[in-house]
Image 1 (cartoon, rainbow, N blue to C red):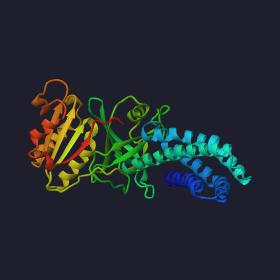
Image 2: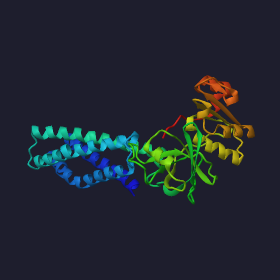
Image 3: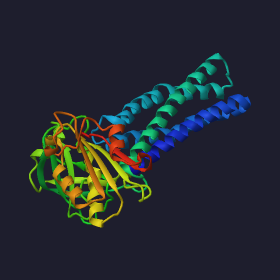
Image 4: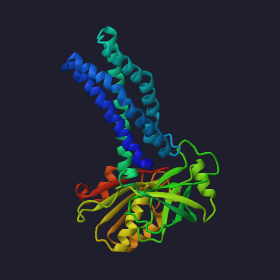
Length: 365
């Protein structure tokens, strides 16, 4: 319900303030004093709609943030106090003052001074609400899905945990009954009972799904960063209850299947591409796929043996591994040395312009 209330209440608040602002400007520019009086005395009644809408927007936004204070969510939360204070300290007093002056027919200097202040404050709130809606749409497009069709929340359990590479751990979860996703999508994972107070990012993280849709379990990968969330996840007992929300995201194999699919991945940015590659191998897809996989060292490269095995089995798949530290050693699985570059792409792709590129850099969540 909060996921529906938040965007709807924000839209109501935005449209209400916009109506106040536009009607004020139009009445002043083109209307008579009677029209101005009608507008100014009507606006205070609109606060019966605006104030609850702003309260619902702020309250539902705080609930949906789940303690997160960074990124787009943090930016939206930081704007809300400014919007509220601007409304309480400027817009409401100015509107009440202007209504009383208009009712008395006193269109003097103090009226127009207050009018100017009200228009500026209204423009500020319109801008801040518009930015909040923009950020909300950005979150919805990649991470949250449509608020009219919210993704489901599922109970799951920790099924297994395994260290794959230096500082990298694979987490396997029981797949909830009826849970379906497309290769490349992600889920939000939340820990119901963290061991310690959550940090500024809250008790939820987003993880790309590394497993294929037909796998019996869900597989995600994480770097051990030392955050309270990661420490809780690393210490959780097998069978511990967790919750996932999703799936989210629109990263998928795209374009003409005759065009090569080229994946550029760094670190655990490999996970959505691994899901695609696993699924393509099981379905026997005929599309050519090339993965450029960059890491610091072979020891820090997750899933390298599996990717090498997949390359040996499937002639349509090419793996280019590159490491930024040490000396490239083919015996350690190195193909190239250094960061992925245009020159490196041209070396292995016959015609890069015909390929469909997808990029996921090194992610730490």
